[in-house]
Every structure is written in C-alpha cells, then in structure tokens.
Amino acid sequence: MESGSSALDLSFGFDDPNFSDRTLLLEIIGDANSDDDRPHRLRDAKRRRCDDLLINASTVDTILCTLHHYYPFAASPPRVKTIHVTSLILAARSPFFLKLFSNGMQESELKHVTLRIEALEEVSFMDLLKYIYSNNLPATLDSLLDLSLTADKFEVVSCLRDCTRALQNLPMTPESASIYLDLPQSLLMSPTVQPLLDASKQFLVTNFWNLDTFQEEVLDLPLLGLQAVLSSDNLEVTSEIVVYDTVLAWVRKHYPNMEERREILKTHLLHLVRFPFLTITQLTKDVLTCNDIDPEHASKIVICALSYKAETDSSRKRCLAAEKGIIASYQFMERVQTKRPNDLLQWNPEYYEEY
Image (cartoon, rainbow, N blue to C red; front, side):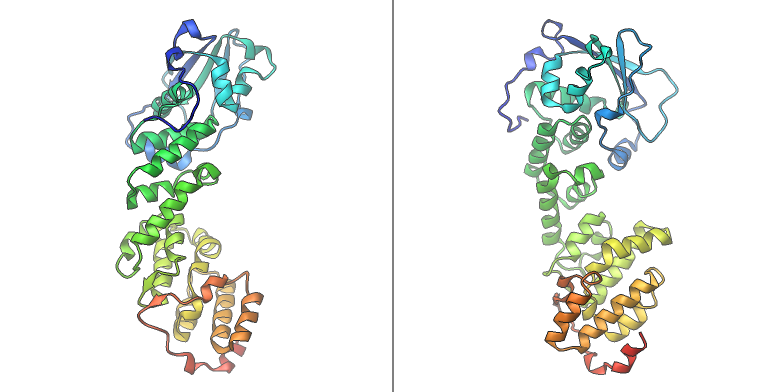
C-alpha cells in the first residue's frame, strides 16, 4: 500500500551496502509466537525517546541501544539480524535516529549500531525501515496497527500519519473501533491519531444508538468508546436509569478493585449520567446509597439533581453555574426517552434540607 507522502522512493538503497554508511545489528529478544503478543504490546507500549539510550562504552565498535520494557528479557542469547542503512535517510525521517547518529559522542561516529528490540516488533520494525526508504505501508489492519506502535516508538511522525489515514480507509467495525480506542496512551494523546479516534467514536455512537438493545455490546467497549456512546444526546433509552445501571455494570466488569472503581466513576464516568432525569426514588435509593460511588461525591450529585428538579428555569441556570464541576451542562439536556420520570410532583423541600 502506497502512502500519501510525496517523498522520493529510495527503496533501491535499502539494505544495500553499496548505498549505506552504517550497519544496524538488530538484537531480537524473546518469542514472537506467543499467543498474547498483540494484547501485551497494545497494553504496555510506551513512547521511548532518545533519552532512553544506554551507551555501552566498553564496546569498541558498537552502540548498544536498549529500549526498556515491562517484562524480563529471554534468558537465551538474542538473535541478530544485520541491516545496511544510510544514516542520513533515517535521521531525516526520525528524531530518534537523528540523535542516535549525531549525539556528539565518539560512539555516534561508529559504523555498527546495535538496537535491541522484542521479537514481536521484528516485522513492524522492518516495515518501518522499508517505509522510511519507500513510503510504502502494509495492507492489513494488524500490520498497520503494529507499524503505528513502532513508528510512535521511533518517532517517525510521517509513518504514523500515513498509518492513521490507511486505517481510516479500511472498513470500520465495532471490533476495529474498539481496538483503535484502546490503543496505548501515547497514541491516544497524539494529534496525528485524533481523526481515527473521532471516526471510531462516531461509528460507535451511530451503531449503538439504543442502549436497551445494545447494552451487552456496550459493556465490552473500552472506556473511550463507552464515553462516546453515553455522551450522545441522541442515545435512546427507556429511562436514564438504564444509563446509570450500564455505567455501574461496566465499571464492575472492568475494574474489580473498589478503590480503582470509585476513582474511574468519579473522574471518567458519572458525568455521563444525566442525574436530573432520574426519579427521586432512584436518586435517593440507588445513587446515594451505592457503595461503588464515593459517598461525598454521591451526595453532591444527588443534591444538585434534586435542586434542579425543584427550581424554576432561572434558578436551574444558577444551579448549573454553581455545580459546574459536579454535573456537566449537557447533563441537563434530556435524551430521547420512551419513559419520563414523573415523580417531580412528589418533591418535598424538607427532604433537601437533610442534605
């Protein structure tokens, strides 16, 4: 697959000693055939900057570049692959290689450079080098995802951009959208990847438009996918209590630890529930007494929601301004519901005074 880049095609010089001034000695550690390689890499991949370089000064003609990871290296000796490269080409496309080849130390002038990578990165690293020379990309979703992770690690921004565009051109499915929204944090924070994330969110919002119908599917979504679906004004539910129950079911499924569960609810999920459209009974019984929610935060939510129910429109605007940090403004917008809370007439001001 050709990328959208207009750079020259230099593939004729890749791994050719006649056009190369350096030799990469690629130390490949681990087993690439493990069944959980992809989940492990998607979960733990982090951006590695050139500051992570460990220079082995005792080696006469080699720079040992060790990229740290979160699991032990294999006990067996690494497998070594020799690749002939042109330092100017690599440095022009990647700040990582620019610093590696021009850090001002004597070792940067040596002809043999050793990079240590994991076996599961071998194919994508070769794809990255081929992209640097030719601007060509692999065609499959899995290969593009692996290449995106490697491009992010070695700071080849143009490759990450072209991978993002290629992924956007592939047919979107609930599974692929979930994968995109569950990428490592470094990719999720990258402006280059935002168009892909936005398209994934919109796909999920469009396809999971009725929470009663697709509740089981929604429970399997990653956090960003759940947030996108539940924040939609067009989400159809029989009652807002369905949204609240879905949030609790999701966090209990994905965060078994009570402390983590409370933190995720408070910082990422509770604002998705439009509490003013719960009934008074649901607010005081289901929300206020829920063990999964921090009691202080639950009290603030219930107070604001009950106050909103009792006040006039002008007072509601003041409540919105005062409680901006607790309930977001869109929480006061009613969704498409087939059942409306009808207990507003049961409101007792004395009850509010208790809180």
